[in-house]
Image (cartoon, rainbow, N blue to C red; front, side, top):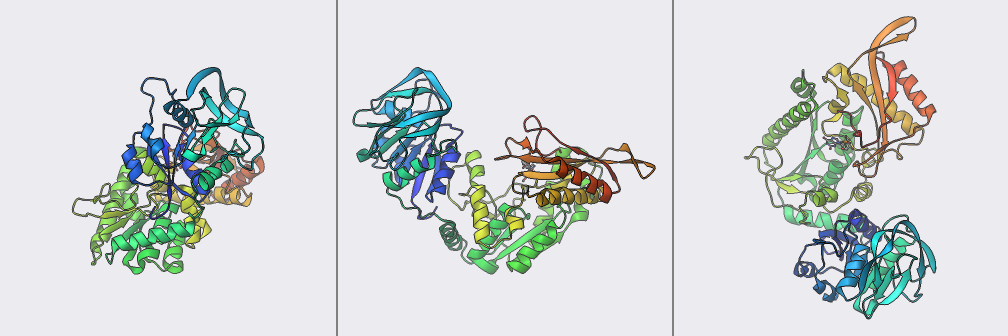
Length: 513
Ligand code: XMP
């Protein structure tokens, strides 16, 4: 990020590299993740304020285990090694790592041995930490002082503050190490002499400055979906270039109840952003007619979206050159494109025709989701948008199992609004990752009044998750389920049955499709 001192987290394949970067940022210091094979010269060129070597799944002695270039430790940049990172540091600098025979997984009792230590300053002499390792450092390199140990890790912490080198065997980044954040803060504020200056305000300032510089006086277009990412991206770009931005909201008619009105209201009236609202529900329904297969649905929706978007963008007489995208940092890391530049110099955006070349503006490219939300709040976006649950691009079409019709969409929308409303009323809105209704287009027999009915079931799905990769079904109180059930069948005549999905992911997915 422009002008912010940066701590680089070297990823040795740890499941926790992202978490380390997030924790560093929570300490108000900007951090980025780099792959372990990044050449030291490249690291030096980036002039980091500190380096963290992450954990990793391998043993430092196993063939093909990722290594560290010894020159890393001579850059004059403070380095903190965590778990595998500590072991690499120890082995590279002449210490000893061995399989002690007593692996540690989970909670361990740590004894702080050196009260004058930098990492453990102002901390209790005995603390609980979280461990996950087979090997352990058994001898610190020469010139390092021992700072902490546990029963199974004789050298659970070491440091050579004059050389700016620190290591811990445990994981300070996880919540199960209650003093972990303090350990990181000590590394950052004392070890690296950083001050906590990376705030939402500074992100907004540096991002808007760089957008206006790059975009100049060109026109910019943004495809708004109503979700958090595209909304925050649009608001940020608007802050930078004002009226040069036009937002295009392709309303495919597959949104949840009152979502489209909310987008209009927020962007056009509240933020006064130039918004083109294309009401294209009929075209999408036409494209979906007779389609049952979920992949075909997605494909038809994608194609129609591009066609509608293209027509609008072409109709714009001033011909926008830039397209805003709400790409987030985890997408950047996962897609392997580690160029952290905010503004990508490339042209064609997935699926748009060749003669519609846009250059991408990706103002959220360096941010995690929770940071995007905080930027959104800071920019004045309403809570309903900032805290909106993830919602699939193809919308309710993936929540109707079977053909998508206008009638089924209405039924699902009404039932879904009840599910969400009851969960919010019970104060569980923020506790669930996603909660929604699914309409499998089958019928079953019921009885209402004295009549037999033959209606649709509604599936209620409510999951908790950290990142949507895994999820668990939420143990909703029976009273909440009961209210949902009786309101849904009482309100929507076509529904005669409500069921609750009690499947985690895996083996299920969050959406039904
Ligand atoms: P599944 O169903 O695979 O979903 O467990 C994981 C997460 O991704 C969301 N999802 C999508 N998001 N476009 C999106 O932007 C899509 O096409 C799409 N499909 C699924 C889903 O809601 C969940 O949060």
